[in-house]
Amino acid sequence: MAPPRLTPEELQAARDRTVPDVVASGLSVLFCGINPGLMSAATGHHFARPGNRFWPVLHLSGFTPRRLAPSEQHELLAYGLGVTNVVARATARADELSDEEYREGGRLLTAKVRLLRPRWLAVVGITAYRAAFGDRKAATGPQERTLGGSRVWVLPNPSGLNAHWTATTMAEEYARLRRAATEDPSP
Image 1 (cartoon, rainbow, N blue to C red):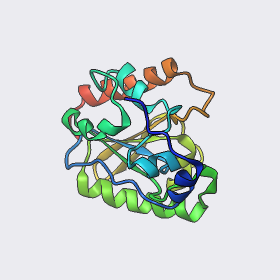
Image 2 (image 1 turned 180 degrees about the vertical axis):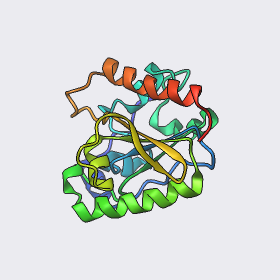
Image 3 (image 1 turned 90 degrees about the vertical axis):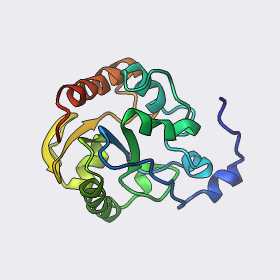
């Protein structure tokens, strides 16, 4: 399904809106984006910008049996997956967020994870993870940190602006998490 065509005015009107989480208790993996972009806020769907590689990479990595459209985001729950954000408010670019918003987002995310108890929290974006949790040396992959018994994995940001990772190399990293979540089902 093609994404809706929105006018620049409609996109700007979505600034500072939020996108509801797609969550449930006891998920296998809770994916966590940086914050919603304007397209996501305008449509109410996570990772809705056409150039974002989240949905294709989820499929390529084996998390979903087919490529889901952003409008099908609630189907994630049937696969034991969910999606949230570090910072709830929508912006045109992540660099519009303040350090305090990231830190507060990290505190709120910690509380959310402790409540929902996913096996894994997967933060999609190393910069967001470092800023939210004050861990400047963190690298992509599994982290030593746990949140309320949930393990933490940092994944590459699926934004089309992230040229350091191709869809293929990104899918390989996402598949590492999928295998870890499958091999160790306990929190």
